[in-house]
Image (tube, rainbow, N blue to C red; front, top):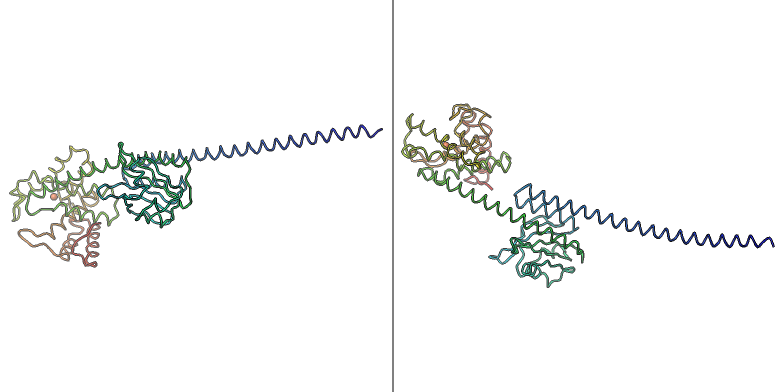
Length: 409
Ligand SMILES: [Fe+2]
């Protein structure tokens, strides 16, 4: 009789146990679902953050430099790592050659190098013609016709080709490959297409900048030829001096932007000779004192001619001081030593060297050994000794190579 209540309690405890166990199991399952959802949301958020960061970095790159190669290199590196690709490149279509010129490329196994892709490559041709992205989840030999060894060498199994559209016309393709089959997702394709839009704008902007730079440089070259043409003894003089000055600046290791300014300054350094009478410029005998005074004014005339043009602001000190001497006996300001702008000191040595090796109506051009002697004789007097030793070392290297002229890469 006493067993009945215990039996009922045991049954109730059993039911409660089963109920609690079921409840606990459900709660655990719900909890695990929540964890999975939270993890997925966290990963999606992380990915979005990465994409935003990459796009922001790309904007920064585009705004920070006008160097097309540098822009493309940094943009491609970002996208390749974001999509976990094994290969990425930009190919610009060149209609006259009927091929795509690969301007920048990165892969895990080969170095960045320029190459080309024939226009008959099916997927490239089709992406360019249709202006629509082409994705090959499993690259077949039909997709890549002859000449596409670059993809076979790397072992590309899936390939995404996105057309680059500039001002409504296709100009090339953005190409991303993986050594895994079907590597890219729909989101990857959308991201690459967004990226391609920005890349096309960056290419457009840098092309515009390059065209303006070329126009500027060609104008400078025309001025420079006009100056040299004033005297039959100075044909091509400025271009030759520029070659030597750039060689010296490169050997010193000066920054590319400084070298560009120096090149412009050297090409224009004698522009003030426009204001000097031809009879003085062309005189084959020694100049009188008055003629010398007139001749010396050309560095000031040069500044007067160029100073109204904003783009020449930084070349003015080089033009003004290119006849100063290291020991302070030059003109127009009798500056000495390091007070003379570095560009002017380089120009002074390069200018003298070019004059020495060139034939004149009253003397033949000196040999390289004779010019070295002359430069060393005037080192520390007319010329900066460090610049002289740089030019002498270049000349010795050229002699060792058996070359009779300075070569500038
Ligand atoms: Fe001069």
